[in-house]
Length: 210
Image 1 (cartoon, helix red, strand yellow):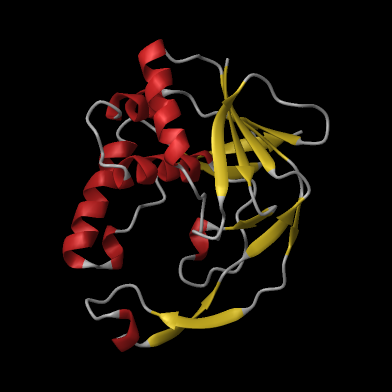
Image 2 (image 1 turned 180 degrees about the horizontal axis):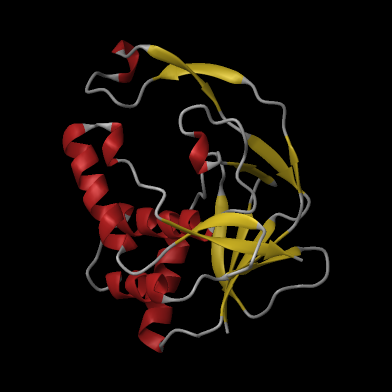
């Protein structure tokens, strides 16, 4: 068994349901495993994208989807703000401003746990620990987090979402090849700036909630 604990330091989450696109109406809760994986990839890339740490992300993407342990959330009233558009080569002060919404929710428990059945080998574990230390947000940059390896999941008080359910909530999950997709898309987006190069939905599976 292998567990990673993610603590939302402000007791709030800022992240929109992926399918909402630019409308961003509903906060995503619990955080989908693919969102967490993307946060790790981002932290790895921001730290220099070392070749020595890449095998840890490749190991994680090959694992079956994790169980997710998370508490309840209380959605905040949606408020629009006008911000400079990102898809532009202009400086922020010269960009047109567009209405944006930033869905958020207050959490009953600030900790979320991702649980995998298999423990990583020692070299992968050490590399993952380095990447986790760099991971500062999950979802919007305002969702400040601390991520670390945990020994167990405290009970009770959290709901449990289990993968491969016959019915339930559909969540995005990482899979073998997802790391390369994210790297390639990011490189093309940096060169072009087009929305078509943003991360795709990827694979989804059903999770049941207990």
